[in-house]
Amino acid sequence: MRDSIIKWAGSAAFLLSLAPAAMGCQAEGSVVYVPVGRNTGTVTQSWSIGGRFDRSLCRTYGADRMELVIRDTSGRTVARAYQPCEEMQMSVRLPEGTYRGDATLIARDGSEVSTTLELQPFRILSNTDTLIDTDFPTSSMLTVLSVDAVAASESVDESAP
Image (tube, rainbow, N blue to C red; front, side, top):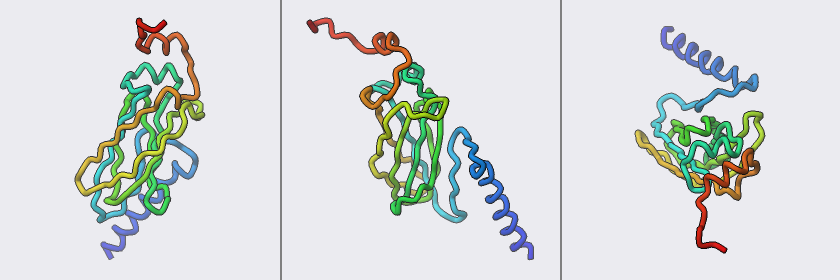
């Protein structure tokens, strides 16, 4: 009897944890359902803009946050994680397995400020951290809020005509 109550309570807690997502709420950080009893590891994604880990470029391009969508090998979305752009890194815990992901920089109003970059497939192993570096080339950026800031942040080739 006690075991069935514990299982029921665990199921109820999981369903309640899904309620904010069902209502369209977004939480900062990652929310991932990991089945009980599965071995897990972590994927840590770092991102740069134009090859630079410069937090001010997030403001320059109007990027409020990074959206990371992770899918399993069947194409099912298993995680959708958000992190403030200026953090330049996020970690998501996943069950062991092989995954694909998409990374997009998002504005405060929810619009995309970059094209969506497809990540190389990656593998999660139990108790390990898989590192992924992602660079958004300046050509992938869809907006520029401050042209002067972009010009000031790019190196100038003094020998160019």
